[in-house]
Length: 536
Image (tube, rainbow, N blue to C red; front, side, top):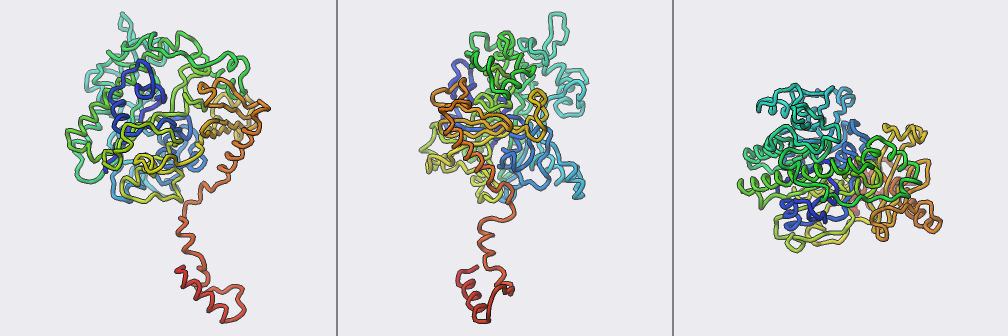
């Protein structure tokens, strides 16, 4: 099996046709849902790009790999998707975004050259780079030598920073550039043709890879930057949707007038205040939807290329996102907290083989996590997941109808020490820890130094009523906190020995001729015979 691993950035779980959005057009992604399994309760391990992706690429929780904020690298010794798949003979290739930061200190300490093959893999989460494009080239960081910037200039977009001046800006009637950083300009079309957008360019580059790939099994990670901000779409996508397509905002006055202190601190951030305004939502959300439909069209191109090259029937297709976008829900913008708008993501897996026929077109309600992807990919590549390292659970039994669940709780974490909320809350840097545990009905958020937040997802699916201070729900909070603490107490870095290795070392001292506590030779002989009989 080959693997086509599609990830988009900042796509909410509920902004696809197949996940219930009333008017958005996503026919190609919807078709994938009909051909495979759509996991309706998939959660990321951090509601922020960098740490979420580091978990998806390592199969490990944030507290395990240590990359708890954007720009924070995973350690040089962390195994990643590429490391696991190469062990079973599969190339692992990147086309798009990883949000990875290299562990420069670790590589320097070990004498690994940054521009060596190993150094580049460490810097890119284990991927071999076909095309790296993280996006986000503000005026102070134009990166004129980036491949996309070079491409745009070759197409006549004459600027030192065409990513900003053309791909992510509009213009007024006088030709003045209207920066996409200003939310009021989200209604304008980008100053580029749709075929030159980031989304279209990345798709073309991915198709180039499919054209030239040989017989070696491959995992191609096509990682789109959109619908992440700046919220600017090229024509005709900028005007496909209007105010009538905006779904009702999910928030209550009580959340705003008497919020949990942490929630209140994030509501006070500029982006939270902005998306609490109706005119911001009316400008941004249609553009956000247009960017999603553009991605859907480009995924259609990519799937068609798989068919043209004869690879569709032996390729596992996975579609997901790294986190969501509040878009004004709960008086918030961006992501970073644990409401479903932020931490729950779409996840669709298409296994073309006959073994998955029974689940084709179904919706799975099992609790799953982004860290489940690495062990799933390893199994489909014909390997055995290294459970001493990987904390996720393979989804293959769910995909092939052999199981109905793989866990009873999901977990997610966030460290807000870099945010202004830390100062608003007067929190020590080391105590800016948030952790979520969610089961079939309840979601609890632990905030160090504060009471927990609690939501009943069955009675209150909009998560509008925080039950964390309700005495009637104290027992539920206590039980979930005990489950969370149990998870904290687990081994998260006991990665050097599998259980089989540990069992094999039993009676190792006797086998090596080290005899501690024995009275005489008879006792030594008995112990040696026992070790041999159990094949230790």
